[in-house]
Amino acid sequence: MAELNIRERQAGDITVLDMDGRITIGEGSVALRSAVRRLLEEGKKNILLNLAGVGYIDSSGIGELVSSYTAIKNQEGQLKLLSLTEKLRDLLTITKLLTVFDAYETEADALSSFT
Amino acid sequence: MTEQTTRLVLPSHIEAVGDVDAAVTHVVQRCGIGEAAAFGIDIAVREAVTNAMVHGNQEDETKSVEILFNCLGNALEIEVRDQGEGFDPSRVPDPTDPVNILKTSGRGIFLMRSFMDEVEWSLRPEGGSTVRMVKKY
Image 1 (tube, rainbow over the protein chains, first blue to last red):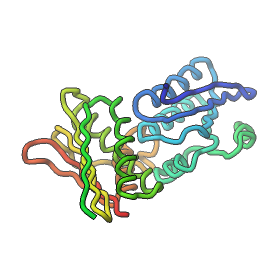
Image 2 (cartoon, each protein chain N blue to C red):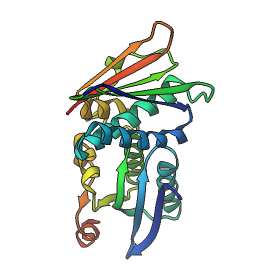
Image 3 (cartoon, each protein chain N blue to C red):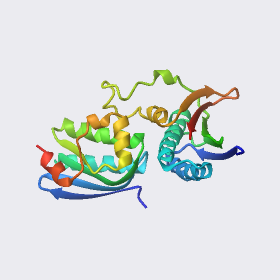
Image 4 (cartoon, one colour):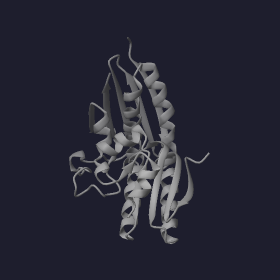
């Protein structure tokens, strides 16, 4: 079983990645990196990460979120987060990354925030 | 309550980090530690083990990482031992500093210190480095 499963769908010009599993060192982090890299190569620069199914992330996974954010921003795109689990929210809070990422509780709010 | 020790030895490849989770689950249940603390302990141990494998043992699969869990009755003591040369933890930058906030690495030690009550590093006389962590409960 893959550590992180990612399903892609479109909501207008925004790509939503529905993620399920763990974003940790090794397979999980690589899966996220590969997905974002492929989307950027396809010219898809508005990306919403649906983290409702991600119950665990380690520092490597957090680093991958940051890397994705920077890569997308460098291409003048936007990366936003949806449905943080309580544990993910705690981790992003203590690492002060909730001051960097835009995070939303509902998909409607998240999608309407893209400019 | 008598002390109880659990020992786990892992090869230094990152796929083995996941083996920590089952050991942590077993230990926190045996020690009677609550779920909230258990999450933080798991995070801290995974970060320490990852550091031991990647930085301490340089992902040399001929080198191992030893993890010792010791239930002390009112605290859980954990030691993670690698075969590396150690480092100066005071030189690790603060990842929450705005200068560092967008760096893609460097948060492992910060997370260990955030979730554990005590974190200290030492060099063993016979060689190798140890990080000792304590969580009181």
